[in-house]
Length: 193
Image 1 (cartoon, helix red, strand yellow):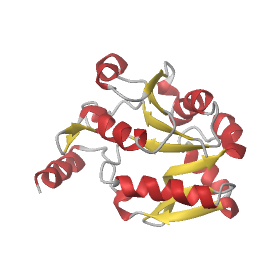
Image 2 (cartoon, rainbow, N blue to C red):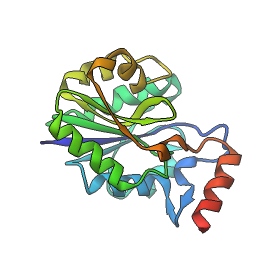
Image 3 (cartoon, one colour):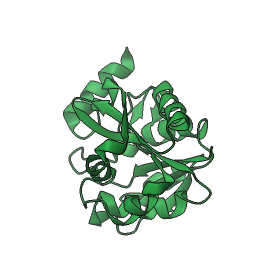
Image 4 (cartoon, rainbow, N blue to C red):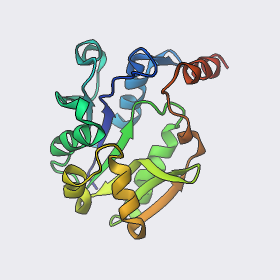
């Protein structure tokens, strides 16, 4: 079953004050960590970049880079741009973010294994009473992902609107995402353990 990976990493990191894509955790940039994890599991891996494109693009080694020049229009813009490329020859797309560094590779593997058993379902990560990404979406949702997501919620709006087609896979570590200087301090402490 062909599943492509799509990493959304186009944000400006305005609250953090520096490109979070290039923050290091366990001595590796976040964008490289996620591209490494998905490259072992997916047929092809795509990464959408936007803000700070010129700084980040030279660090990407395994993913095919998609430059979203309209990243300021919100997450939906990056998702739509990414789906356009990642849907080719794909029966499913695993959507992931570059700012959830605590998610272990085994969780992505479980998402894909579950998708093989339930290929008509959205296989979504469950944490803190949320169903969200990383998630695997079957081909039947590609059009909705490309054209019908809410501007700010992106793929999560599709998950919310199709709850009867969603199969949850728990991962409490997905609750941590990197947005603020305080979270960066937490990540740096965890990296030293």
